[in-house]
Image 1 (spheres, rainbow, N blue to C red):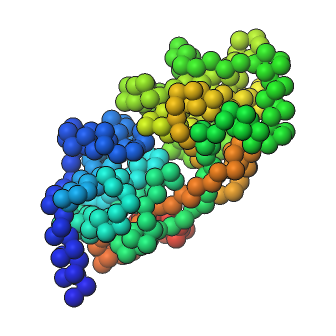
Image 2 (image 1 turned 60 degrees about the vertical axis):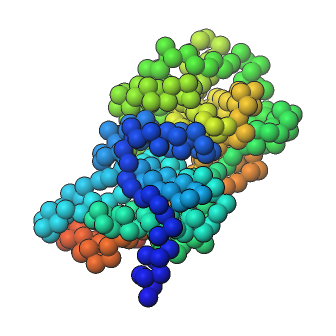
Image 3 (image 1 turned 45 degrees about the vertical axis):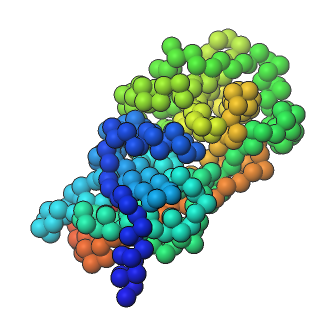
Length: 360
């Protein structure tokens, strides 16, 4: 009876299919809904080169609503040893959350999630993993009917509709003092000086080494140039320049549909003690405000934790958002079979219950 009801529910969906980045409906959907750069087909293609997999999106329509979620379709390396051809689905790096033409319609979301489940199972996908967007929330209640919502913690954002004086006053006093001191010493910010991209890459890589970042974050140079090609005028480079003309800190950030995202940042080792990134964040917020952005998303701590990175960001704004991921097991029996094989082949590795899918 349960499955029969789900089939009936899905009948209201007139279109439900996996589409490729060059499908005109993808670009049209983004013209009609609030979105972020993570949803752009060009960005998903770039991620497919970096993360592996095939760039795609699940697209569905009812008479009154449209649904789209960008995805990477991935082969499961050892599925062939079980005489299977299963694949799985994941949203790429960032927050490429599902989008709805009318996000305030929970009934439509329920219909779309049912349609997604059926379409994915028909194509032999075993599991799906979505990174949800902290600024573009969907009703948890509906999502939980179809999978598991895992809350990882809070992120920090700045409301750029506030007056400039309020943006300044809400920065913690010691951070304001640091920014004033840097400006007084002759540090200044330069925007979109793309001739310094290689210098940014070097500073970013050194920063990743200093903080012992995971291997994933050591992007090749082609990723940075590819990012610029994919995002065009949505991508900006902010440099904090010292009085002697050296780059002290730098950030690649985006401005898309009123949302600023700090994508990748770094600080040169010899300037760390001065905290030039504090000046950088403040200047990016002012630039965003003058460009008409509504909100600046600083992100959170590593893995959503309230760590030193989170506390650094929290000093700039009291505004908090929830960051969650979404997990769907589409073929229960096959999923657990893959997990058993993974365990057998990785006996020396601990199985982290936080990770999804467990067989990766």
